[in-house]
Length: 287
Ligand code: FAD
Image (cartoon, rainbow, N blue to C red; front, side, top):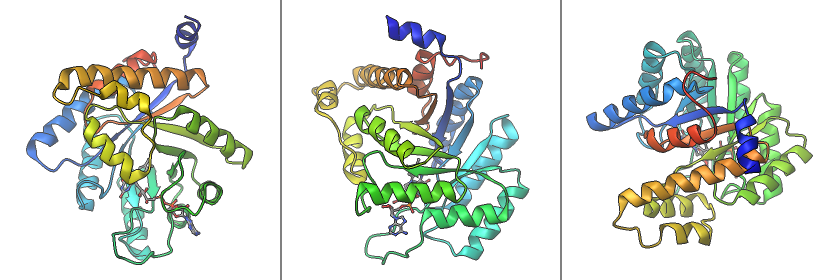
């Protein structure tokens, strides 16, 4: 009850939505329907991933362009440095600035299997972008530690480097272990990282796919989550209800812990993210 009261008194919840470039006609339609559905919630920004699902940079550009043309939303392209030279990145930064892009999610990207580590990191990209223009820059953070980091402390120092280079927001990898997120946020504060550590919320509808994602990203899937989805392998409708409930409960606890900004990994679907925003008090036309 107290939690609900507190939630109803929260006025300053900011949300952002992440999309990926569609690679078929049908997925294209789904994406634009989702953007239309979520836009009235007035997200602080929406972001469009690069590479992870399409492998083609142009797709990210064209989604960003269309969002700018058709909506009032601030669209932030993700940009990775593993597959581009510094000169290419500088050119791209100038092009983006000219097109009206003012916010970039700066990432290293994943080094393809078998290739040597290029020893270039997201902090280098933040620095490069800031040299070109005064972009707003968001970076990635890992409450359960990035899989390649030698230890949690060095990963934290890396986040500090990204912030010192000019990033003003960290968006976390998805997680289900709320305590791990809260401890991480405390450690960030203790290390002098003074930007918002925005939780990345992944609403789950496909539990089997989640297990794969989690294994790859080394994100812990707690037993309680397994218990929630156990037995629903052939029941998509119930999975969706359960997934919404899990994400709403998590988000409410985070809000109670003082989290004011939420980033949603929408997977280009609006329904669950919309429901979670609604539960957090984010309503169309209100904020
Ligand atoms: P970095 O911050 O560079 O860190 C990479 C690793 O190197 C870490 O283990 C870090 O501790 C270590 N490290 C950093 N600096 C040093 C140093 N000087 N010496 C030694 N070790 C060091 N991927 C995509 O391809 N496209 C996307 O659109 C995309 N979007 C994402 C959005 C979010 C919110 C998140 C959380 C991830 C996203 N990713 C995306 C995945 C990301 O590219 C991978 O997780 C990648 O492996 C690391 O990227 P990073 O920017 O965190 O790297």
